[in-house]
Length: 146
Image (cartoon, rainbow, N blue to C red; front, side, top):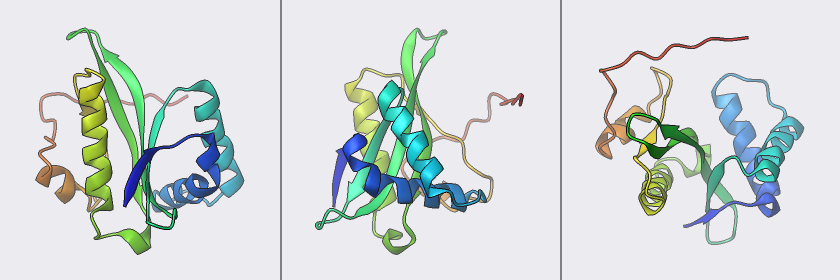
């Protein structure tokens, strides 16, 4: 397995994975919209996407990080917004490798850390906890929708 920083050149590999991620979260499949969304992220350079590939260059999974800042600590932080491993690649260490790659990237960037949120029934929580991610019990998260 090889983990790379994805670019617009990887859209053909990445878009089906991103579409699968959205379907996992009960959204309708829309491969063209997925491709367009990712293309815009690359054009605007507003996220970093790591892509896991097998030895033949096939996509196994990805994670997408969005940069943010902590005003209190006056440091950059990253929101690990998306993590997805294809059904065929699950249980083979792809998710763990992507998470560890994201951690190394955050450290290299001098970031405070990484933050993620996940569905309360997402089985990946066991992986997060095994990799020493801590469930935040000190703050509440609120959402406003337009």
